Image (cartoon, rainbow, N blue to C red; front, top):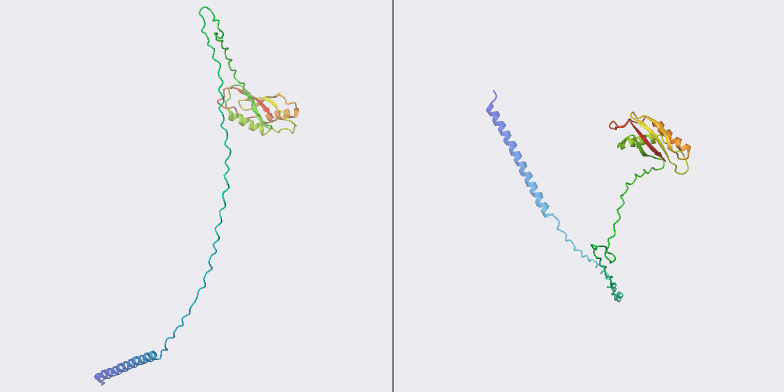
Length: 237
């Protein structure tokens, strides 16, 4: 049989031997490091002395100060001539006013100027006639309406716009103008179109009349309009 106690003692002996070897190795390493440090401190070279270097700076040039300008003598002041005082205009004596005597109860006074002249009656101003609308060259303008009161300017403008799309002014010298009369029914149809004021040029008159006939029918007359038709005098230029 193996002796267990002997084996345990043998293991402990081996462990003690290993611990002693490690301790010895540690002491040897510390001693070696200490010797190296002492050796390095003894053999360290002496510090070198640094030589000083003197640097001289050059002086900056002094700025040149310009000489102060010599003040010029002031020019002599010339005073303008004083205007002569204007004399006030002399007052002219007004003639004495005439004394008018009142009317005598038994007749006229013998003094002149006693009668008051009768003031004439002022004329009654006559109402000015409405001026004809100014029509530009190549345009149209309404110079008269028949059939009743027609305050619908929007309809008139629409009518002139539609007629203007069919109005092609001939190339004629001068500025001729012609007036064409036509009737617009309630439903917008145009009838009885004719030239009432010719321009003296038949080509110009026929072109104006054709533009009206080609526009028919126009939009119906406004519902609120009381008349049964609308007569229009239209000027072409």
